[in-house]
Length: 514
Image 1 (cartoon, rainbow, N blue to C red):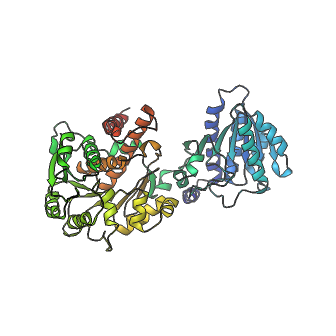
Image 2: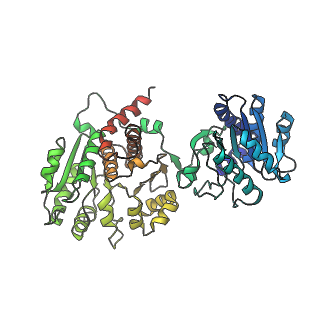
Image 3: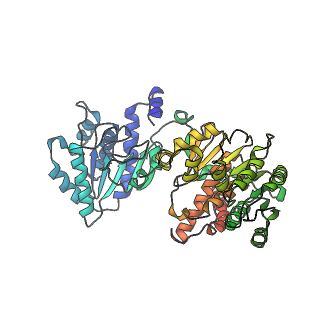
């Protein structure tokens, strides 16, 4: 955002114009909250920089529209300050807390309908202390004690939330609504910061498209996914929509193979073939009646045997994409099998999706396992698998998920789908997309197998692996969102996602014409 604002100024768009646009945009959002409240009163807590300036512009507009608004300046502003001068000229009451009027602040907060946090924005670099700490403590006490809710609107971001990392100061207030300016901030998609935003809205402040044209980090949006999904021509046949080979399952993990194959079929793949241990095949053949099957030789413990490697390697060339890993189990035998399939032949193969036990087993390789895999490859690790693959701790991965995914996508020359709340998809060239969804409804066994199946099915239909990963993550999250509304966040199972997948795709395609 700092770079974008600098580009705006260099192109002739003044900081004052951006501030006027920001203040008006947030005032309109506040008006939507206040217009239904009789005798509504708004308190604006303003800080020393541009964030405070935006709040003062906002106060001017609310005052002009008939809202009773008061401004408390929580930290000193410049002596010659146009934002303060114009607000006072408009008749907005302004109190400087440098004079210590905390009693008056408490009284006004106790009777207000809305308080706007316009204190510290993206430029915050210091811990909250002194007078500001006292003011925010009073705000917290009043909100906790009041019988009628005091709504908190954060302008751009709550004071004390780090826009880059998502860390929060102990005195950071929890907003009911955050109106962020221009674009969402990276720290909004990390915890604990994500829990302090409330409902997130993005305000257009007049940033021209060319100012952000080369930004490589973006959110996945419904509009983009709807436009990117593969078309379904009326004169198509099953070959039109590709063939997917799913190498999955073992005696102890039968369900993973079922979920992955079912998800690939539900997303529209023309043909899904399951390669699985021979003893597991009858169970899955009964459940997966639409799939074709390739029973494989197995060990005494029900794992795919190393001897299956050449056959899987050869047959994979007949498919548009291969998924490896779901429920394979972890053992030296599976490591040898994967070495055969992935590392033994330098010739190009169809795109590969590696999930679950494929990742767990290759993480044990002493060699630079990623070097021999020259086919386009999507890795779908959860945080624990990412830690094993990268050699980082779980805490290090979680500390900056976006940068971790970016770094290792480039290092491995593979697409990395770092699963979890706000899933990150990073390409080797640095292009990165973040899913805006975080929900406990997907926190159960098997949901990752469903995601890998969705991504695999989209690649089979000729989407690029990166686009398939982004679209797959979005479809998966939207299916979870549907379950959240229908069932709630407790008790939804991975298998429940399967019937939601085509409904989500229908909604996405319908949204293009609504």
